[in-house]
Amino acid sequence: MTSQNLNSLEMSSLDISVLEVDPLDVRIASRIFDEFKISPYDCVHVAVMKKSNIKEIVSADSDFDKITWIQRLDPKSV
Image 1 (spheres, helix red, strand yellow):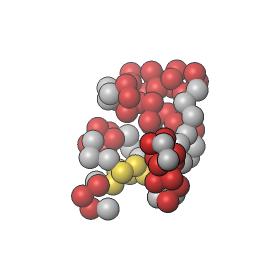
Image 2: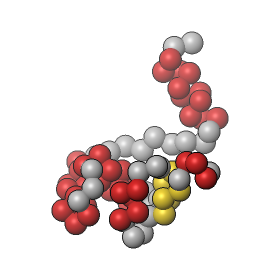
Image 3: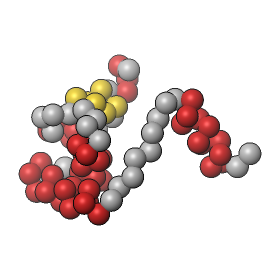
Image 4: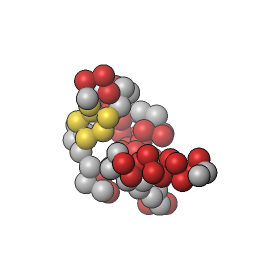
């Protein structure tokens, strides 16, 4: 079994989906960056979350707390 197959197997057992990032997400991420001044990578996560109507994220990164419509769940407490 390849590591890619193993990773897919692990993710499916955790009920995790991998979402696509498209060019519109990147444009929206740049607007999020202008407003909240968080990491560009975090901005892409936020843009995809918004598109997918996801309101919770498990992350130790407190920058997500700046986004009012996202509830950040600390991995230590989940």
